[in-house]
Length: 408
Image 1 (cartoon, rainbow, N blue to C red):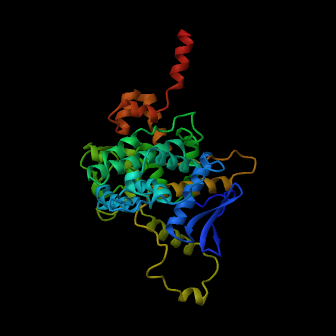
Image 2: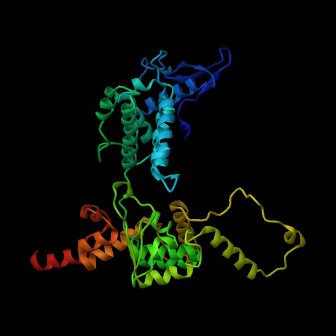
Image 3: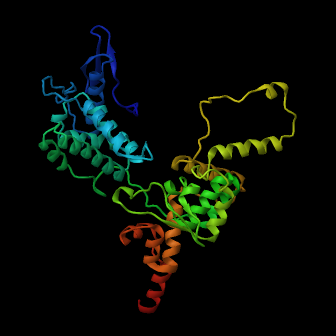
């Protein structure tokens, strides 16, 4: 949870009273017992209201709005109940998936601002305050809209479980999403294809596992989560063109089947990594680390000291390499490659811009669309709807230029 900025009024202790206090507009406002969850929630809520610009002198109310009654259902209790449900519902191969992680991030601001309040009193104004709190944390507009929708989804579940009245959900649905150009929330740049020259430039500076991941994704247009999860048993090698079917994928919950053809060049890339158990991942950070250490030992120019020779490998190191890459570790490996490639360049040479795995999918989509049209790009990316493919495949500028020359 990010701290309030240094310009915000501080959460302080009033020693004589033992209460938490905050000064606003030249006046002290008491929040409750110092260090208590109620006082901290009241403080965070007050700071969120301050960021919205709605607080004016004489209209400060920072006390916790907890309702003590038999019907009281704390929002923190509701959040914990929903997370228990979501942990079982949103999972892949027996483990919580990325959607569950996003749900936890989405509900954290709600807990921070209103965790001790009654869930039955959480209304549109409270949701707008959460929205503004997300803007203050510099989250992008699209991300905020996605996470606000996840908050609504929790209340939809709560209505179905008869934990809150339907009127609560109807009130939250009245809060519109943030619109482009009509909010102070940060906008994100659209994802663009990465230039092949920028891809090739970093390959010498990453491990052979990461280099194979990059090239395989470039050839197939897989999603990052699909390429890092590939295993021998997921690949049908009975035909001339191999077919990879991920054990889990983005649209699996819709009942869609995802099949990815692997042509001769892709087969050549993964062939050196097939010498492992059928259920093991092809690309392993642990294997990369072992190869890197072996290379260091081979290239060592000074003899090992006795103390170094006596060192034993830790049985349970705090930070051990994992058996498979995650989307984040794959992205970080690419960032490292870009950093090292730029470091080796001459001072006057053009720097390689930062790029990340999803851009490889856009590069492949643009290439296929240019050669085989929109239908070809749709098929290669595995989209059911061509409108989705439009997002990934850049329009063919050469065709537009030719049309302008001939008709414009």
